[in-house]
Length: 480
Image (tube, rainbow, N blue to C red; front, side):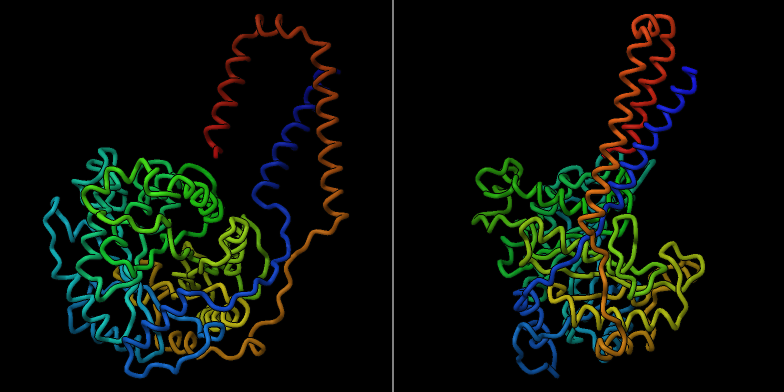
């Protein structure tokens, strides 16, 4: 009989743990309250850049009615200068206003202090002359700057530097050289998932340090620069090699307290003598960037749950920003889209659905999300083999037209309904949890009275050791 009671109690305990884990990742969704926004300064600045670079600039409009700025991620390094100009002209004539281009620190500064600017010079000149606004992604690391664990034999060129100050010096040199051409900087790419944070655990605080030091160096060289977070990848994980973008952003906000004042920042003291003569405003970022890929789901899927990867997941990020008291900072969908390749790790949709969803996504954001400044399609023409599933995102002419000629929202997207929690559901949840833990506590107390714990531990020491190891493995596997 005691065996059955023990099994029953253990079953209840495991059910409680499972319920707690599921509730942590799923939770109850709450309505998203509309947030009044008269138009963000960054969107106004983006409009100004577009007018300055474009021969056919739009007329001046009030910030609240400014259009959503559309762009795309490019990989221009694969083309000759003439081919770059042709590719950029196609995007500009198609109606896009900006391109997001990665600049690899490894290729620009292969040795400490030795810069090779030729390719970057040509690329940025072509972007600006095409009438498009460049959004620069500073990413990657040369071997000389990496930690030993990120060098050979486990070489990882996407790893961050061993010392953030080395990257900050590079970022400052880049901004000093291109301050007349570049205003928007994105620091790193997808630091919340492997392999983009090297052969180590994902650590938001370490990324915050890198972001802050690079941002300060850029602002010291160009006071007008706008610093964006890295584009955070969508993931439902919360472990060592991936952290969901909502929690990662919350950790960034918590880390920002360390950088409230330049004088009290212990990390900046190593940077300031080398780079900063007049300390800039100690602000971690000017915009948040995410990647709300649609995966297998329609734009109309309005569910907002941590374990669900869909396009409207971006609203969870917005709610985290508002909860952190940062409602004024704009949000960028730096990369979004739906993939059409059957072997895609980003889900798969038909070509017709891809075009339709792209059109609906732009219409939805334009009409209902004033806090979203810009949207960028996932990729123009990938620098990858033809068999790579990234080609399922490639921006063909039909897709480009769909993005830039979105119909009114009423013709494409139905009114959205977000799951709400009724008081009855809330108190049912609380009552069931209280009942469950009361039952568990009652059975544990009864078992404790019946079992001589000291004698049991003495008689079965191996059992105690095994349980300690199992608990340690459980914590190590799922924390944080």
